[in-house]
Length: 62
Image 1 (spheres, rainbow, N blue to C red):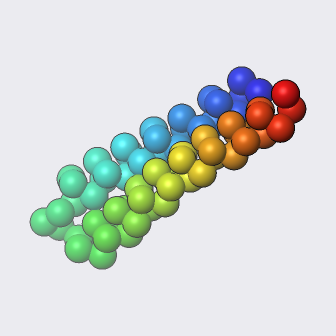
Image 2 (cartoon, rainbow, N blue to C red):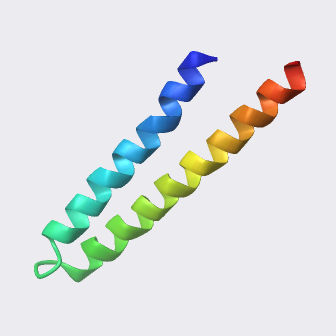
């Protein structure tokens, strides 16, 4: 189960990368900024979804 917890934090890492990409391209390409923010929001959503799913799975096994 430790591997699932590790992959959960990879989503946060990608969210930070997408936010950095969006901020660095604010004045250059508006469409790229919007897409990067959407992917960042999706990555943050996936982090919390996986966290909830992992806890639910652990509680079921007890």
